[in-house]
Structures are given as C-alpha cells and as structure tokens.
Image (cartoon, rainbow, N blue to C red; front, side, top):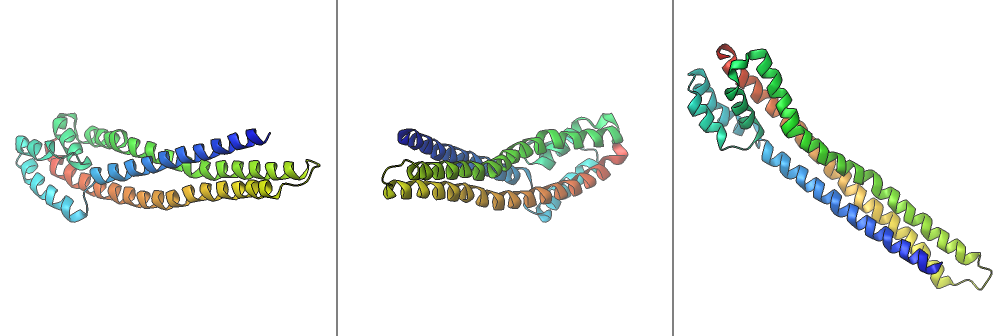
Length: 207
C-alpha cells in the first residue's frame, strides 16, 4: 500500500509538471501571437494608414498591395484581403473582413487562451487530489493498529501540503498572465477596429 501511495504521489507531481509546462507554453504562444498581430500603439498604426490611404484614394492598388504584403500584422493582411476582393461591394466586403479577422486571428488566440484557462482550473484540483492522497496515507498510518510511524505521517502530510501549494503556484501566475493577455487583446481589437474603420472609409467610394 505504501508503495502504491508513493507511485501515485510521483504521478501527481508528474501531472502538475506537465500541465505547468503546457500552461506556460500556451501563455507564451498567445503573448507572442498578440505581439506579432497588433501595432504597438495607435501612432504606429496611424503611420501605416497614412501611407496606405493615399494609395487607396488614388486607386493605386499595386502600391497599396506592396505596402501590405510584407507586413504580417493583422491590419495590413486584412487590408490586403479587402483590396484583393474590392469587387464584392462595400457591405459584403466589410462583413467578410470581420469574419476573416475572427477566423484567422482571434480563433487561434482564443484557442490557446482557453487552454491557459483549463490549466488554471485543473492545477488546483490536481493539487487537491494530492492533498487527499496525502491525508489518506496519514490516516492509514494512524489506523494501522501498530505503533504510529511519525516520520511517515509527517511525510504524508508534507506531500499533501506540497501538492496544494504547487497547484496554487501554477494557477495564480497564469491567472495574472491571462488577465494581462486579455487586456492586450482588447487593445488590439480596439486598434484594429479603428484601423478597419479608416480603411473602409478610404475604400467606400471605390467598392
């Protein structure tokens, strides 16, 4: 029985380590994805639009395409998509560009962020499982009817506390990180919304 508890204990530690690494990986990937997708601030976005709008107003689409093609951020790629499909008409184009933003940009970000949320919820639960297992081991020692092994009991209680602490140590930083990412995502959506508004105003009379 003691060997089984030790084996399960190492299993709990292993699971906590795996989900900690997975949560950190997903958080880093979302952070990088948002950083690669958005302009740093409105001033930088205005600078890009300041170069793009004259080309659109003059219907110089080759120049506009050249400005967008080498830039992997969301707004230039959405602008490129809008230019390539400008014959669809204003309303349809605006709707399809919004759909494209959700499918190509937000869907991937939300998928990764949902995994961070899953880790935040599951880490304390796995820590609690370790707590229950540690307490079970301690009570089994007490109920054995033999002389109580205080060293083993202390080890079981220590295991219970360590797994609880590990679960919280994984969840709390990820909660703070996910909140920071959500703020960045909202700022990105606001910036892109403003940018698309200006883009469609420039293209409105030409689609």
